Image (cartoon, protein in one colour):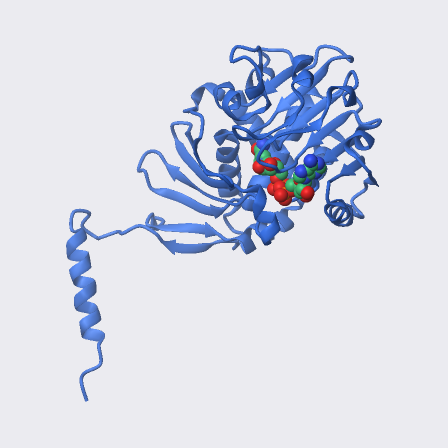
Length: 356
Ligand SMILES: NC(=O)c1ccc[n+]([C@@H]2O[C@H](COP(=O)([O-])OP(=O)(O)OC[C@H]3O[C@@H](n4cnc5c(N)ncnc54)[C@H](O)[C@@H]3O)[C@@H](O)[C@H]2O)c1
């Protein structure tokens, strides 16, 4: 029997949580990092363009699309730092995977949870190539929605087991520590960013504020440290002091997008940066010495969402963690779309109860 192509599987938030929990968070992150790594290794096959961003005073709404020639994927995502104060998420998302041959969608899914997972998987993947060998301690500054995912990905992919947490709201750090309890971390809640980075070989910044913020100043970053800068991802929204950038080896996802959105928006447009895909496929070096400061200037790129969509699409069959959506009109004779509408009307009339 051929599958009904007009019926599209939909993964709700509830089903995504069940899929992640049934897989195991660490395994999900590790498998997803494997998909991302494979796609970064075949970087040239992808359609690549900076995302389409609609900025407003309070945030941004973005469309992120790409294709490898066989599949097409897109994500709708927002970033609204003030949302949290109204009890809403800073970042929410959903997305779709489609078949390039027919243009028919293959999967529609929530991507709020999936974005946190793919961001963390990408960060940890980058750190595998860039962080100092044997790193065990990571500072996480900004302990909101992304923070636990980052911690678990770094444990799964690099063996990070000591965390130093800092957030301007201590309730966020307490929440993060509580959620990570029993997962094999030694966790310290710190009183400041400067305190948090003390003795850390990796520093993750994941704060949310729509301004040129200075979460880290130059004197806080010692030699040999790897910085995973996640929160500066919009024009006018950065986390690091410019001086840190000037003495770091900088790695990015897709340079044309990062130059608009990343920490490097603070630098000259021709400041040298290396794309992570080049490091992954061996064209460029990652960390070259124990003393070097490396920076992954993460903003999030469409290929990572594409990898995540493909991973979920491959994992779904047989799990029962989706529902069928009647998403596409599918007349028996493709040109008779109007006839299908007429027949539906006639059927409805026939079903209407007769007047008493
Ligand atoms: N690079 C990517 O691919 C990617 C993906 C997802 C989210 N993000 C970005 O990551 C950031 C975090 O996202 P989230 O969903 O965790 O947001 P969130 O609102 O849930 O958490 C942000 C946390 O940062 C804290 N914070 C704000 N200013 C701070 C400061 N000066 N010092 C310390 N802590 C501070 C807040 O108190 C809050 O707990 C956002 O800026 C978001 O846009 C980037």
